[in-house]
Image 1 (cartoon, rainbow, N blue to C red):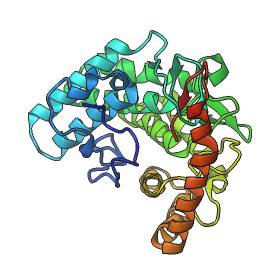
Image 2 (cartoon, rainbow, N blue to C red; image 1 turned 90 degrees about the horizontal axis):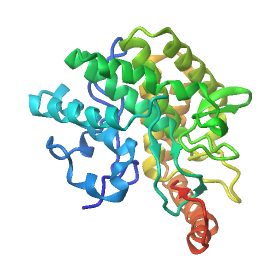
Image 3 (cartoon, helix red, strand yellow; image 1 turned 30 degrees about the vertical axis):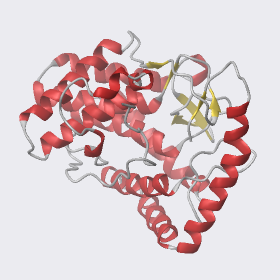
Image 4 (cartoon, rainbow, N blue to C red; image 1 turned 180 degrees about the horizontal axis):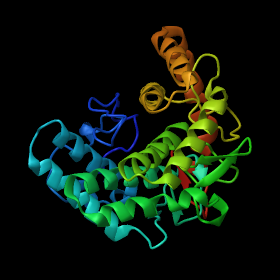
Length: 309
């Protein structure tokens, strides 16, 4: 069985049903579709691509969400099992390293860390620490944020956007500035800040949200949202699934911080999604992107892996 998709293309994701801005409880996006059963390990973990930290973290967060929804203690046990695996895989400097090679949009030297994995891992660990009282998870959550302060060219997950720090899902050169991955990453900083009363995590979250809010217009084409800001030959628009994910993420983020631009942008992007004309144009432009960017990379032999968009 292939691993579960870790993006919104295969699992349309919506706003979480149990969000509590005052403490890490329900997750900000409803991930329950990522875990069909609480049994560990999930069947896909034996597949080569199933070892990605993002997939394990999302499966664990999905189990926790099932538990929060009152579906049984077996779901918390599944989340703890996923957390134990992530503790075992975490390096001493707090990273999870991905060694997968697969042909998609960005070329990345392996092994590589992802701010999205770091943030989602931290979010899972904080919830497990609060639910179980196990300090190992609290310590792991704080370690997971260490790479946020290290530039991507030095093995970390931070890049500068207009001179301010931005968490990078993919450590590309030049930076890709993937929107959805950055928001998932920032939620991890928020959870450590609120759940573990960590001042450094609070600074990371506040700085990251300020960078995002100040530059959010860069992902707005006037008719659709962009997946990234990487200088591709043509603009890399979000798929419909990612566009809807962006909207849900901005609305969830607005619950955690007071930037009005988040809700204004979410409302604008919702109007784009409601327009048949905008949806059709976005689909056409995405097809053009895939023809011009992704397929040529698949046909070439390359020494470095490339990542999905």
